[in-house]
Amino acid sequence: MKRSLLLALALLTLMAGPAVAQKKSGGDLLYATFSDPLYLVPFINADSASSDVCALIFSALLKYSPTLEIVPNVARSFEVSKDGLTITFKLRDDVFFHNGQKMTSEDVKFSYDLIRDPAVNSPRRMDYEAVKEITTPDQFTVVFNLSKVDGVILSYFTAGYIVPKSEISKYDKTKLKESEFARKPIGNGPFKFVEWLTNQNVKLERFDKYWDGLVGFDRYIFVNSGSSATAMVKAEKGEANRVFVPESDVARMSAIPGLNVQRYVGPVFDCVVWNTKGVFYSDKRVRQAMSYAINTQQIVSGIYKGNGRVGVSSFVPTSPYYNPNAKRYAYDLAKAKALLDEAGWRVGKDGIRVKDGQRFKIFMITNKGNIMREKILQYVQSALKLVGVEVEAQILEWNTFLTKYVEVGKFDGYVGGFSTGLTANHAAFYHSDVNKGFLNRGRYSNAEVDALFDKIKETIDLKEQARLAWKAQEIISEEVPYTFIINRTQAFAYAKNVRDVKSYDLLGWFNPEKSFVE
Image (tube, rainbow, N blue to C red; front, side, top):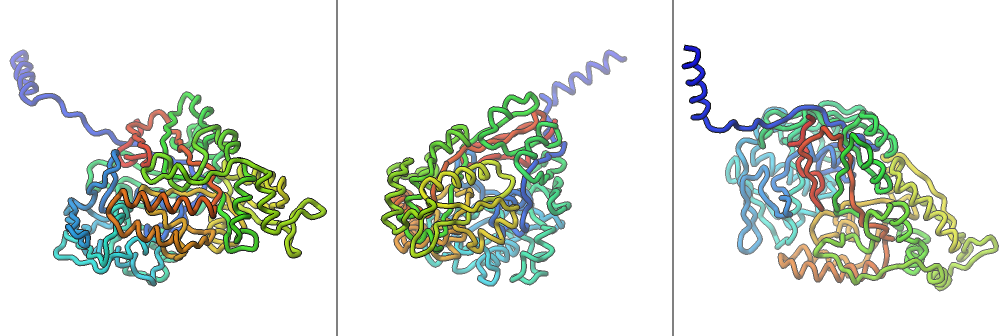
């Protein structure tokens, strides 16, 4: 009897076929960071700390595939009309917000209408300037009608800006930064908000009704460690299982047995931003002199330990829009001094240059906790002294640095970094229109550059976009609103029990919602 029962069970097992591997999940991801978010309204923020958190709380209509193709996400499908003036999204009918409500076309329309509303003052508003009207033929269809062709607009739909109408409509749209939603967001992404303790941590937890199946981590916690150095110590001690690794520490962190360091080429650049409307840097000859006086190759080799390429442009060298022929500024003190002389800045008795009674003493800043930027600021301070420029340097807490100084132009120069996206449209960094150039902190202005980036948006011909981007880079490299330092690789260390981590060039960590702790 017992033998017959065993045979029967064996037969049933064979008939059932091979066992299906269960999806793995569980554990907490503790990400040691060194700055706090500002506010968690996804289409209001423009800082990396806020964006990193929002990327897990909110899901976008579209996304990039590992091969950099734009594919559906919470939109089940999308279609662009032959004339390029209509984009129709068919939405999934199984997407829920974290308050339990189903996402519909009304939520999408309401979200993008808010972005386009000047009263909201979203830094993303000009991304959608071509949108004339948004309609909702049914509960799961959204139609964007354009007034003109926009060659890069699809890429903007890969950012998660969809908020629940029922929640966000409770607040004054002109004061969303101060709203409760900015501190306690409700999204449609893989993780839902739990808690934000200022300057301590932001806690998220798995959203069990996430439309794309089982989410890996139980919780995803951003731990504000105050500095990059402290953050790495936490990872070394096992108090965090993910941390950003500066280029200077890649070799050391890679040698730690319990850690796995992943590197990829990111669409990022580090630079010095010059205040082109200030007393010192309105003259391009002075900005050129600064670029000749700063030995970027030495910075890349020494501070970054060779992990990246000397910066020439905001476009990374792997981009099809990168112009390798743009003007370069090899270290040359003689040229730097000659240009300053030509601009009327003469060396004074104490070695500091003077013009019309004004000493060449500048105020430069960077954000506290970023080791690389702090070292660059110290280097620039020493380097500029060699050409007769005195630098008062300050290292500021992130929120203070951004809101009290950078965003209001209270600097002569600052050391910073930017993520650029994957399109040919870099208007955000150069356009004189404050809405289009919302990251143009140095207030650079050039009508021809403005026109070139406007034309990039008006064509769907990628070769023409590349030609226009190349021309823009030629002008920008001559006028140097930025001293480009490096197009850098990015590195993150994970505890070795964090599994199924996939990183891709230009995209970074591709699947945080599917990774887990073993």
